[in-house]
Length: 640
Image 1: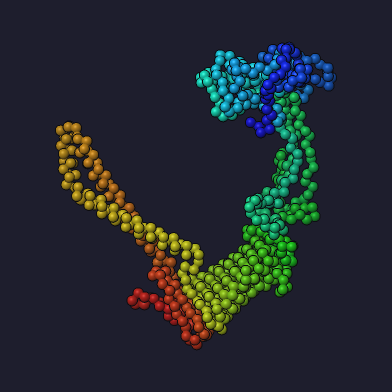
Image 2: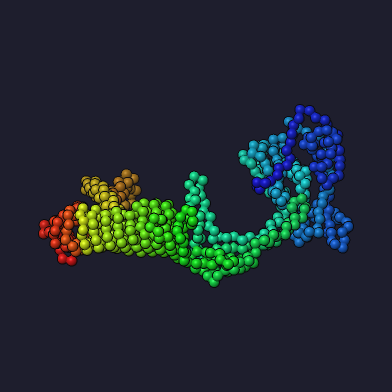
């Protein structure tokens, strides 16, 4: 039922009141008439009740030519079957009802069979739908006239609320009949929950639609009340994807009229038109129009801009700097085709300010990246230096001076100053300390305190320092580590399962071995009974089936054991495959070894770590892992 439903039919009790002499009146407004009579007796109108003696329904069609046309009475039968939609939705058609009622003081006695039946009649806001509500806990005992009394109670509550009777309410008799049937079957019925029944329905008007302009590209993100608001994300640019709905103009639409259950014609208001599009769009914005709207779709990736009263989709952005005061964080996504050039190149200023986040397809930063800043792109070029707390991530990445964290596929760094780098192919022109992890690493000039870990190759062209560590690790990537861990976990699970299966197989093998003789004897007897058409003893049949089930279960266990063993062999082979190429991995120093340095190779199977410390001044340049005759491994100078 509509939340805005108004309830009618409440009652109040007073310890003493004046008695109203039964009075018969004819009126079109029951509530007003009850108020007048109550006022004359100086009592509340809620203390009055009435009987409905007669209902007269009148209609007329008022035209411009005949404004004084007479009302015509229609019968109850005619009003009940009146469903001419065209007439009812004609603004010149009118309906009214006159009621003949007998008014008297409300009687509340213990003999009243309906004293515990809490009924109310309510309507939605437009009064086009009327409902009967029965409160939870209402009680009623069946009496033969209950159905008619219920209809009478409903009609009295309706007209007291100004709702027409015998029109729009064709379903009310069915509702009363269903409720009456429940009461008749139960004899004493208590309503266990609130009930609502539709008892009248007019013609609901369709609301008028005012025009509206919706800027879908201005993406609104919902923020949890407990989530900290990021004031730096101010939407400096609005990125868009091809096919995305950018702008929608909703056309104004005149509503449709209605007529409510009071007989009132409901005319829709005229639409307000105040947002008609007066802007233009570029060629890469597609316009689709229908009877309800005009929609503007992106025909390219990029970001939307409004220039010279025209919406355009662009790809390139030039800014002086990205900071909290100017642009705020920029998050258009790496697939947006948005390319940014940040021009600030002053060595003492940040081109990307502290705490800023940037995510675009390509970015060219002439200057520095500040503390706690984050840059994510497919391609990035940083001409200045990165702060030690900055994070840079790009498939193709170039950094002049790097002190922070960098992640990419192909990474080139001019000078690494104790920062960290992780990628696939990493090239460092000058390494002054830091951590490098990649499939292949190339360092032009290696100073001191560099930790380089690769899965295929580490190459140093000029060695100037010491305290460096060069590690070959086949499980370098996090994916490989996760796969290896998962593989080891599968192996452990399979080994446990195989141990349990061995125990079960032995158990059932022994049971079958010890019971075979008895089984053969039972089988022989059962064949004898069957041949002589004698009913077989139930105990023999049961034991025979038990033995058959044990044989079947043993076979299933053996098949499962075989399957688990095959899976174990597969995972064990897979473990060994993680280091298939470790014998081809190389650590290369094109220069002489200086000071203390070490080379490590990490094996997966068997799990072990081998260390080799080249002697200072040694001319050995290329090192690899070799397998010795006795199955052991060692790091040795090898051919490239």
